[in-house]
Length: 220
Image (cartoon, rainbow, N blue to C red):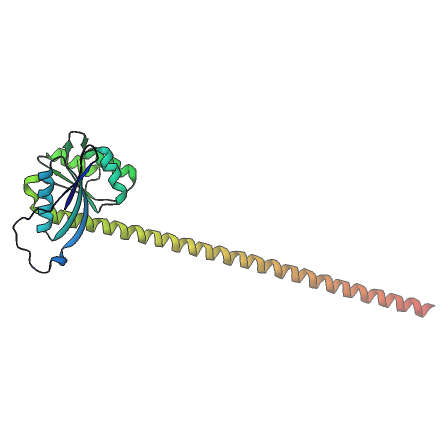
């Protein structure tokens, strides 16, 4: 299904469109997919959902046309964003900039009526994961799968780096604790030696005083 978030912000629900295709296997085998579609043409948005269903996805989408609606939907963390290049009040380049500013890792796929190679490269450099032509949506399912897999790899790498950092921090803490323990033990040994030396000196001094006293008594 798809929810249209209009310019006025009013949500209108559209029922899923039957594409007449025959679904093989149990319907629950379809992979759920939450997506945000930046598109001012509802028919084009439905065509994208149709392509995703044929690819084995069960898409649930919100369609937006304005920057504010786009910003409002990012915190809900859609799994992927499909964006038209240009709309009357918004465009894909601005959407990519907002995504980077938000520091969110949500794959963005550009889906446009026409797109030149130069513009396609520009979108990829700005952070888009892929780009497709609207009349060639047969590759959309594969593009979505690849984009989601790349995201999973990035997340795995971040977790590994975090774990490595935590491991290094733990190792550093252990080393510092051992160093402090060694320093404390050394200080304790030095104090013990100093005390023993003082006791020895005191004992010798006491012996000398006793001998002197006995010698003095003998003279008297």
